[in-house]
Image (cartoon, rainbow, N blue to C red):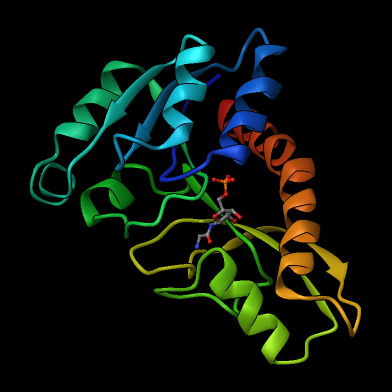
Length: 192
Ligand code: GAR
């Protein structure tokens, strides 16, 4: 089974769910947490679970391929972006074609693209008067939020829901579905 690396920039609630989920799995291991922020809470989650962590700089990420060596050294076969906000450089997209997935807190292709993350997304969904939102898990390509869709789940939006309410509903979907979808992908990769 492929080892998993999680890339995350922030709080890491999704990373935490995935880490916990695979603790029960003897075959699939989260071996590395990568963050672009030295102070990101997700790094504490990695520590607590005894998972190796790595902080990357913009310069090393975009101007070297050192991360690729680090991933290969650890046998990483699947990269999971869980709230990682930097655009993925070409060398990494090519090396992990169909083996790198992202979660987005809306129903792509709507409400994606640069700057569309976190509450920005939920505010835009509210402003547009949508009655449904949800999550999209998709392959990563060289453009923000445009890789092929793997999985979507939806939640209803009530007329008086504020962006914070939408965020809560969407987060529930993320926490429920992300890890099982990653597990399914890992199994498919193993089976070739
Ligand atoms: C998640 O809601 C994820 O969908 C979003 O960042 C959040 C990270 O939360 N990603 C994007 O908006 C990507 N464009 P977490 O740190 O609590 O897992």
